[in-house]
Each structure stands twice: as C-alpha cells, then as structure tokens.
View 1 (cartoon, rainbow, N blue to C red):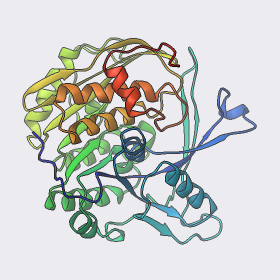
View 2: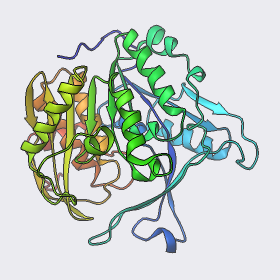
View 3: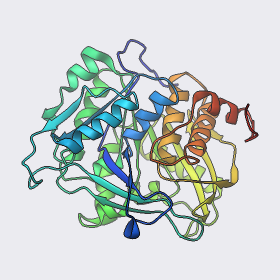
View 4: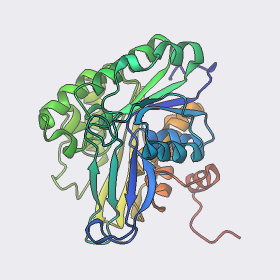
Length: 362
C-alpha cells in the first residue's frame, strides 16, 4: 500500500508546461477563421481534473512569460480552481526573442480523419525554468503536498527540464510525498534531440524516483524500452496478457514502482475507439471495465483524465481494482467533451463506475 501523508496544504501538485490551446471546433487548422481558446498541458490536466471532477486541493508549478497571453492562461487556470501561487513569471522582451508562452493548435479529427496537433512552443518560459526558480523545500516541507505529478512531455521540452523534474522528485521524496509520472511519449518533442534513444535515456534516469508509473499502450516501449510481445505495430489488437508481462518486467527493473498503470486504446476511427486499462500494485493486477466502440468527441486529454481518476482513487485509499475503474471511467467521460480538460463530475464518474448508462437524466 502507498504510504500517503495526511497533513498537507495541497492534495496534489503538477509540474509541467501549460499551453494555450487554439481549437477550430469541427473544422481544420489550415482552413479555420476562428478558434476557441482553452488551456491545456499533459501534467496540468491531471491537477485540473483532480480539482474540478474530484474536489481535491491542487496547484501547478510552471512558468509563463509575463504578458497578456500569460495572464490569459493564468485566468483560465483560476477558472479551473487550480492554485497559481507557484507560477514563475518571466520578464517578457516585447516580441518573444528570449521567452514566450506556448501555443497548441489542435483539431479533433472525425471518422477516418485523425486528430492533429501542431504546437508552437520553442523558447517557452516553462522550457527555461531552472531548479532554483522553485523553493522545493517550502513547497513539500513547509506547506506539505501529498502527491507530485509530472511526466515525459515536460521532460522532453528542453535540455534542462529533466533537471527541474529531478529536483522536484528528490525534494518530494525527502518529505514523504508520493511521486507519479506519466511517460506520455510524443515523437515530435524528441525527434530533433535524439529521438527514442534520448527519450529512453532521460526517462530511465527519472524512473528511479517514481512511485506510480503511468503510460499508454506504446509509452513503455518508446520511453523505457520494454517490449510488449505479440502486439502489432499499428496497435489494432491489444491483449492484456502481453501488457501484464511487460509490467512485471518493468517492476523487476524498477523495484521502486509501487503502482504501474497503462491505458489500452485501439483506434477504430478518430471517433470510435476501444478503451480500457490495467494496473498493478503489490503483485496484484486489476483490469478496468473494457469499453469497446467508445464514441469520442475529443480524445486529447483522455489519458490525463485516466491519471487523475486513478490518483483520486489512490488518494482515497481505494484498492487498485477500484482506482483503475475510476481512472478508466473518468478518461472515457473526458473524451465526450471538447478541450484538453475534463468537464465530468464525481457523480458522473461514480455512476459510470457503477454501470449506469447514458439514458437522459431529468
């Protein structure tokens, strides 16, 4: 069982980059004439889900260029109820020569047309954050944090972000804070700095600090080098037995892992996926309810919502079987609404975990 502290000002803090997502709705980026603005980020989405869906006290550690776009992002985060006290504000030079805020253009896809993401995130303030920019002792020691979440997207953002993550993880462990990490492999982030070889070098270095390791059907292979036997390259069939064997190998190599969880997604079309998850804790495997043919509005953030549901279950002291059910149900619900972040409620998650369907509620 995880030894989760109880005396804390925050239930969870996420460390990572937050970008302004510009969404063309049902249209395409290259033909759009208007965009809807959201905030989003692989690590941040977890903190927001824990706050809005599950009522936990959360904060985010990140950095913004101090301009109007940065203040828009701050306002969006505040609307989500996430604490902004630990945002580092970098002086803006007027045109972004030295520091910027990240933009993420995302189209949702439909049917045979897959989702597309085009990020514009070079020289962002979050990429330039240094370990010394955050008072980790104050955060984890004085204030107290029960859970730290970060991941492979932030680790890939620059040469220095792995150092920031390592400093945070080290301080968290000194003060009894649980550390979770979502591998979240993104080829576009690694391609110019060494590809999979570099991804594995960085993620293996950070994995030794991780208590709860999270990934999807390809992350453990791409980010840590664990092969999943019998799975085709296009992931058109996913046998849970193969993933159980992979998890056992990962736990053997990293005995510090106390929980390992992976989502399982088979893409039929952009709007119809098979969706499930498995998890391991203390030698026991648990498999979430499998949802074949899940209809999807916006798949972005589904894995992050899985992570927040799983973390909620673990924070509440649920067994691994119940925690993975909460993760899978929350991820499924999050993909029925637009934007990176979840619009689900705890009541809706509980109902789906309990087997209730989509009949009208009135």
